[in-house]
Image 1 (cartoon, one colour):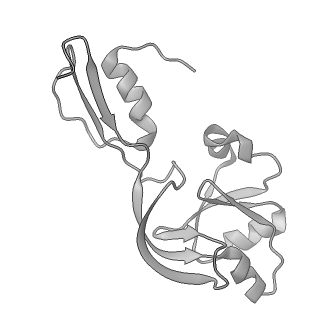
Image 2 (cartoon, rainbow, N blue to C red; image 1 turned 90 degrees about the vertical axis):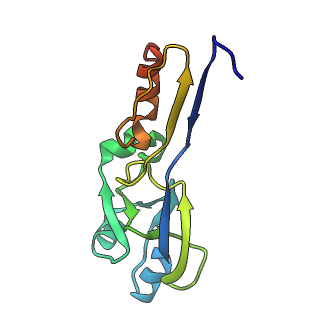
Length: 157
């Protein structure tokens, strides 16, 4: 219906994951009598000082420490003043919405950190000059470059 001179693209904006637990690091730290200096942003816990970073490294419910370069690549506005950044463990999310350290939630969630390995996207492209083929699993981070390549577009920044 779009016509010969059009290309139709369908893609998703970000992944969606099963979340079983919400972890409130502030409530957990208070129960442990630890003063925590943390901000939550972009699905991450940002430790604002070295003591808070050490606390996160030793705490259940905390997943991978996000390398500083990766943080700068995806969210440069978050780098200044941050000692370390952490993403939640698999099937966890960070929250400050409860007074309890761990809360069973059992739901799907989106908008988490884009470097997560299971963040995949869909990409359907149809139009004149687009060859039909089945592509390998597509990471959310590769949609732009794959689409640019399929459509023969120059890279822009």
